Image 1 (cartoon, rainbow, N blue to C red):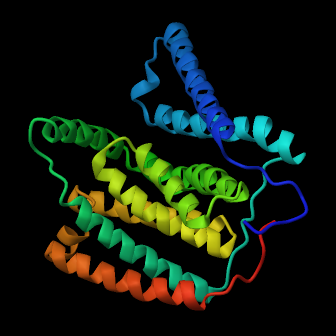
Image 2: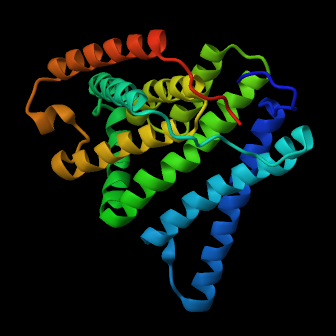
Length: 276
């Protein structure tokens, strides 16, 4: 982000390749382990919460390690490192309502995507079956959604991809959007894609302004925690259903919240520390 005299890693085609290779290596390790467990103990753990948690962890850890070993260290001579500094209370008071406003906006836009028809109907049914499988184990869902996903995904999409692009000279708005777009694509369905892109832009903005990866991790965890609570309350991650309000009111509240706190955050907020 800020130019320094020390070498900075970038993110381009080479970095993307090593991220994918690392993810594939992690996934392969999980598959091989699963096959060994099935062969030796006759236990199919692919339908257990432990498998889901292990697969998610190894996939992202593999990607991070591959980028660290084959891109970051050869380029900078140092291991991959991020600033996880906390910020002042006033900043949290700005970014939390800004994030919540975008969450309401994202829900309202996502609600307009069809859930029936020759394509969307079957796809939505499949998506809902996956969600039911994930929510069948509340403890595993909380660990995955609130703790693991925010940490690993923010390191990859904001810490590696977005920051690496900016280090390579890409304009920050474009880097923020590209990282958010990729973040949306990896979710693999249109109902999470919209929210992931919109919220990813907020997460990228916060990281760029504060230089601390801790803040987007906390905001990501806040979003996922709200989603988990809404799933248990409404089965559909819906603020409108939980609050018994029309979707347009939820959208209006979201626009007001996001606009007000976005303007304050971007116009008046000043970085209190530099990235390490």
